Length: 478
Image 1: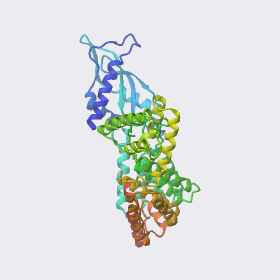
Image 2 (image 1 turned 180 degrees about the vertical axis):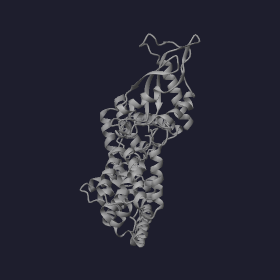
Image 3 (image 1 turned 90 degrees about the vertical axis):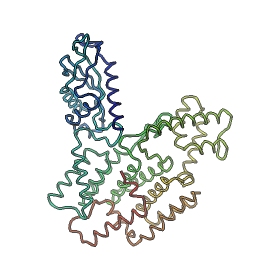
Image 4 (image 1 turned 90 degrees about the horizontal axis):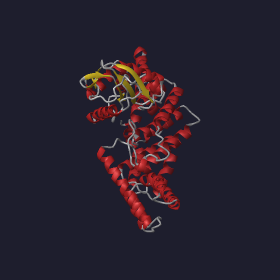
């Protein structure tokens, strides 16, 4: 993947350069025989140069308006220097200024014509991060923030209690900076929020988690939904559906711990999110090229199947062979994600869209009740929902939820899973009977220095107990 990303950037840059010779100025050569070559090579040299020299401005990144790629026009002179840089669609002046600075310092082997160096204009696509296709979007110039924060978060995990004095201040500074810059990489704002909770600053913890939720919560394109054009699933760089659920739950718990009037709505956000993932099981792990190709073939086949059912005059309804065939072969999200596209293309008419929409809504509710829960991911998602309800409403709320599952036609597999959850909860009742204490251990990073040893032990024992009952490790795993 690493080599693929570099080849993609290099090839795209060379292609853009080949077609971007300017006609703006008479002194620029319009048809060079050879294009300029970056000293050190585009494949490895440009990423290394940017890694060493480019410093992403904090204010630009924190604005949320700028990404990790940029398109720039450069005039490369016959001397191999850059005399002019023009940036395209850069939405922050500080980022534009830094791009101009770093590109003007590059050195090139000039373009030539008839063996003589000439001035040309080229368009370059720059990746402003080490890996274009994978991993978290950490731009060049911010690596030190991440390394320092990760080191200190690891140090805190090894401590039984918070450190004191200067050491405590250093940890707070490192984690706070990472949370401030990378609000959309949840481990940093979550660590900072739980750190501030441990120090008694609940308001800051709530504010941090609200900001994290607003930045990390993925609201898809309203026209195509999560599945995108033609219902084909793509990936979102740095995003993980499990982590999004954990962000929603941590936000709700921080509101609850602080006695916020928005506690109920925060839990509703979390439960609604889990319900959506129960329906589509789309946790948006990064797909392989093979998975993307398979998805494309699958959606083309689904389109044919759906059209064929209507061409044959089969009005779809519950229990018909046509509907059973479609729902057996394809997920509800795949079907609903393609409805708008099919309608615009004229494959199905408005009456058929309305009929399908109602069928899908009925199936959505049945799916939320566990009717189709067969995969392991379904079990974990229902477990996460049970945790949210238990934290918010206690044992009574959980009992109502479990009764709803039993009465809603859930699969035998889900019923067994919920029975095991209930049994494990009863087996850990001594540690988990005080939900306020459970809330404390989940929303604070560690007990404060000087906490009695017995209380420290109970703090960590509760964490282990709640993780035995509910799928918290699965949610938190990055």
